[in-house]
Length: 116
Length: 211
Image (cartoon, rainbow over all chains, first blue to last red; front, side, top):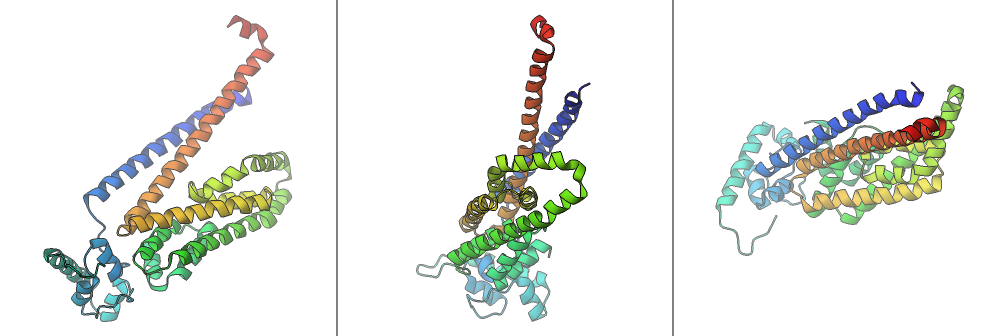
């Protein structure tokens, strides 16, 4: 067999592996998109109050209040840091924020209120 | 918190310097979530936490600086080392340099914004194969500016789903990468097939006439 012909089986094997990897990654991507359509991002310790307010489409003031903080749009501290500084468990803060979000969504939208 | 989340928290607190540091180090080959931080920066721009032009300029400059550092390392260390320690591969190195000159522009441009996982390696290889630096700089600047603009715009458009969009962008990048590898392998197979047919005609004309 010539060296060129010897390379063919290796190329076929590599091509098969590359196509299999492409198929797997494409499947993973499609599943990811479907997961995204089903549910929104959960609240994570890196998120700041303004970010959570924007992603959940609720005013930031209520979220600050739920954590006992004065409303301050320049306060960009992540939740993890707020939990450490307040000496409270992170899960408790997340639960308070989720309650505040649910409460804000029950309220009728303000006519001239600030949009987060 | 995983590394990505720790960097997102740092970006939220300290802003552009964190973005610049991550992009610079990421361009040197460390596996950092550069795309995720760019998307998050777009989201923070949308929320009024960061300035759009500052993000675009600083992120592009940091990425270009990282690429040029990689290129320089490849050029001054990689090239000399390859020549010194592998003289028997001289022909292959010469072939690699010819290939870099022929395909280098597309290689540099596409690995800046479309097939980003290969970017750091292309930097080193471009330097080691002595790809002309003015051309490297031109394609690098174009590609990095496009990458930064696309990812920041994506973050601005879908500003409330940073992690999900970051993960999705990474997934799509890997699909494109594996598809590119499959395309290159298929191209090589077609090339081998063509050469095999040509050899049959030239070396064995009777066989080709009979078939």
